[in-house]
Image 1 (spheres, protein in one colour):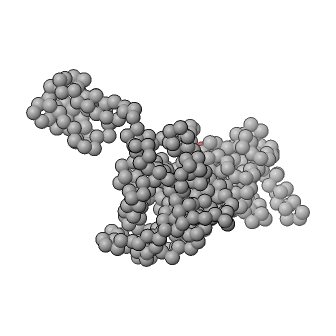
Image 2 (image 1 turned 90 degrees about the vertical axis):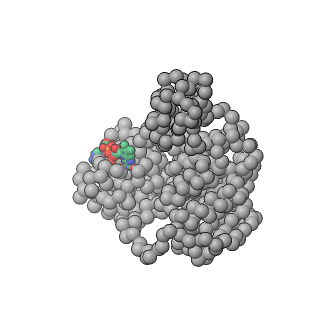
Image 3 (image 1 turned 120 degrees about the horizontal axis):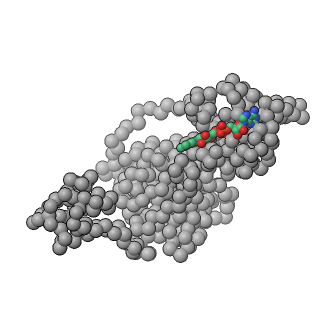
Length: 393
Ligand SMILES: Cc1cc2nc3c(=O)[nH]c(=O)nc-3n(C[C@H](O)[C@H](O)[C@H](O)COP(=O)(O)OP(=O)(O)OC[C@H]3O[C@@H](n4cnc5c(N)ncnc54)[C@H](O)[C@@H]3O)c2cc1C
């Protein structure tokens, strides 16, 4: 986009000046002038009665085509352990890098991080590692500064990170400092081979449509992805790669925050994302007490307990159990949906499960469209039969 002032048409009336929400316009010598920072919102154009303000799309991509190369994955760790989403992103990143015929790099900030070499086995060609006690704990400002510095130095064309609490808090800052775009919570990443653009797909308008977003004019192209959206592929033992240890330039390395203590969130005892089997309940359960039936089935199967959103909203079960667009994204080997209709927002969180068993008394329930096995019937009859069978063989 670009903004132009037609000086022949501008009469210096100043109508546009208060219209700019960012205060970027001023009248100098009876003509309007625009300061840096315009985001082309169009407010001044609307305020101008003389058609002197012209905002137009600039077709040309302002990035030289070979100025940035490589796909980067931010390899997040907590307590020195790499997060599982990192392996999922490295697996996906490998495919993106292969399509672009470029290298895949992981960037790791922390202290005494375990299994860094695993990143290579999962597909990275290089790992940039900054190991320092200063980075042992997550500090938003420090991590932002370091990642920005690395990106500015090595100029990757794509940077992806997990949409985890850490990723969500500092990756937008990184994008803002680099003045590039960021697509949060992507559910699909592909490459347009002709343009080398990253096609970043994510649900929008309450999950009712999927939008594919591109970042045409800025580099790097940045995206965050929730855990369990992509599959972690098998590691390759013979894969060769480089771990590049970098020193932390300790000068001026201070954070405005200080970690006083770490207290584990006991409400997060439900590790839904890591469960192999999930038994999930929906409004078909009728009332909160009926969750006991699903708890019994979950116990017999060694499964975690999931839920659709209305049950969480009504206080039948706590939020960490919620599956879906505004809850967890899960990908277990087996997902048993009991009395869940299969709204798009629920499907967004579980439809990549290996096997889905749906129990619903409405044969037209949309959940059956994604189910591997569907049981049409009353869950209050079917679930006790399942429990009985599983207990007694
Ligand atoms: C912005 C936004 C975000 C959202 N995020 C989420 C989210 O993260 N997760 C989520 O789940 N929802 C989310 N929702 C809500 C979503 O749109 C649906 O309203 C919700 O998923 C429906 O929950 P449900 O399937 O339990 O209930 P319902 O749609 O009411 O379905 C109940 C089902 O139970 C069946 N049933 C009834 N009795 C029985 C029985 N005895 N035996 C068997 N089957 C029976 C019915 O046939 C029906 O299909 C979101 C909505 C919005 C607008």
